[in-house]
Length: 164
Image 1 (tube, rainbow, N blue to C red):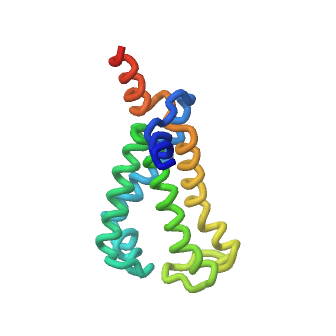
Image 2 (image 1 turned 30 degrees about the vertical axis):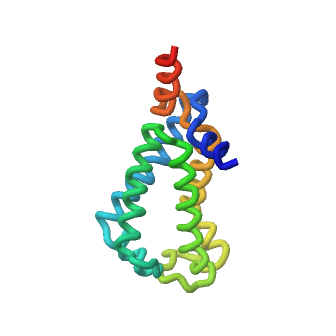
């Protein structure tokens, strides 16, 4: 069972439309620049993780930032797409759970939304919009793979060419 799952993750389909590149560029680009921002602006990295009560906020922020930078680049180039996209799905679910539950309850240590609604389900739905889009794009990439315009495609097709 575990072997089948690993094989499924590693042997990403590469026959998808070339237009999957657009989804990879958007998704990977956002993770890339959000990772960079965690280093550039303390309030986006260490400060945010400290306010949220994460243990070892500096280490955690840097680990997450490096993962976002490397993973974003991997998605952009379409390399190890399924594995990276699955990692980001998990990361985004943790991000949503660690920030939006307190927003719903009105007890968030982060700044409240600038305009109503400030708490409750509508505030959460408004504030979660980017997270929701990123999660769904990553799920799409997990299911569809990187497409034809990708390093995964080059890796897969070069194995077939050189194994003749």
